[in-house]
Image 1: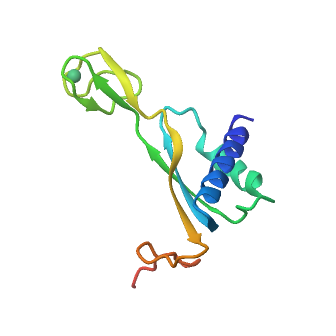
Image 2: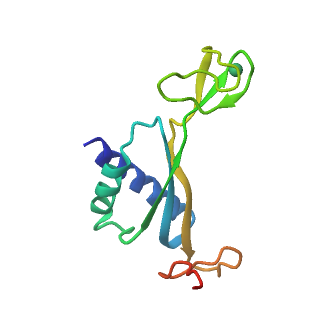
Length: 134
Ligand SMILES: [Zn+2]
């Protein structure tokens, strides 16, 4: 399955960064998923926990941030979000455009717990999500 190999590749990448940063634990990873990346979000969310099981990243929280398709217009120079059926510049209507965004599938950020130094600035929050006051 396409998404499974992607998940495994992603896990390898996270483990590499984790080792490089000498992090004791990776709490969460934010992945940017472009509208044109060809990655099926639901499938990916399904296989990721399976792929991560048994690795040093087990329990890692996966956050997916979807990003829109972007095209750059060769006539007016603007970068706009096309209506997917047309791929015309939303600013001037030109069809002379090239895809400039939305094909990415990459790690945007990771939240880690360091081994030695205390994380001062970006505080690592435990399980609890932000609560809204009622
Ligand atoms: Zn244009």
